[in-house]
Amino acid sequence: MLCIDPGLRKQLKPHIGQLQDLPTLRRIVANLMPRMLMIRQRIPRTRWKFETTQFGKEYIHSPESSATRAQKVMGFNIGEQDSIIAMAFAQGRKHQVVNIGIDVMRVPDQRPGMDVEKFIESHSHKLAPAEEAYVVPALSADVKIRRLCIMLTVKEAYMKAIAQPAGFDRSRITVNLPHKLLVDGQPQYGWEFRLFRANVGVARPKSAIAPVEEEVYQCATAIYRGWKDRSEFIFADADREEMNTWLQFLTVHTVTKCVSALHVGAEDNLIQKESP
Image (cartoon, rainbow, N blue to C red; front, side):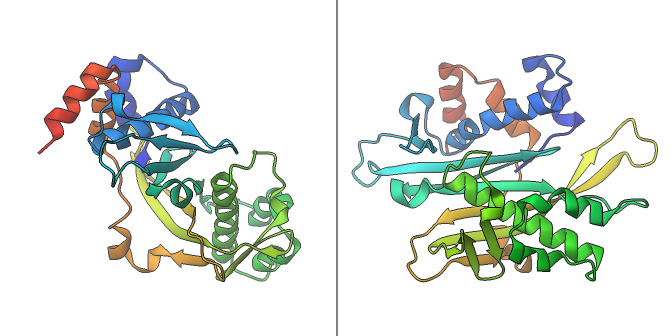
């Protein structure tokens, strides 16, 4: 995961100029994420390429002479919103890793004057009838917002994992926590969903009140594991130590090194320098 803040913009300025448009900057950095991953895997750009499944799901193929690696690919997906970019990836045989998705959603600040019911209503068209019971008015605002963000991010991660278009009707998906995900009423087995929150401090140098502002994001990943009788929801926040084994925040330095090595020769030199 990576946080976009004024510090990153400053570091990238020599490479991309005075870019003020946050969505464009976020898109540029998101497109660099697979390349950053392969640099960290120490695989030169000349030895991997993007490929696409028949359903339009993009993945990375890296032909190798070794028989043990010849059939392995890198499945990946990227999610972004506001100040954060996240990438989920898995390496293995193609059918094991291409169906992977990630989504991030900023949890709204409950500041004075915020109408929680209107916020929920603005997303109600994405909810299945059975999901409305999870956000009834009698519940506390914290619980309703958390549940809504979880359901929406799980839906988006699942849709991205199966390469569904943005116009897909999300109300066809029912997130029945903590055991099931259904589409058109039919249980979808074989899926693993990981749910967690990311708290990031975003520098606001022009703010006299809060020079560093905390933003909270609900995150969800989906990957197809192939189980025939179940799907699993893993609430990763419950075990932070275990979560640290598979979740990593990238630094600004990592991004700038990648941007400075955009042509093939420079990228290969960078890989050689980072090799043990």
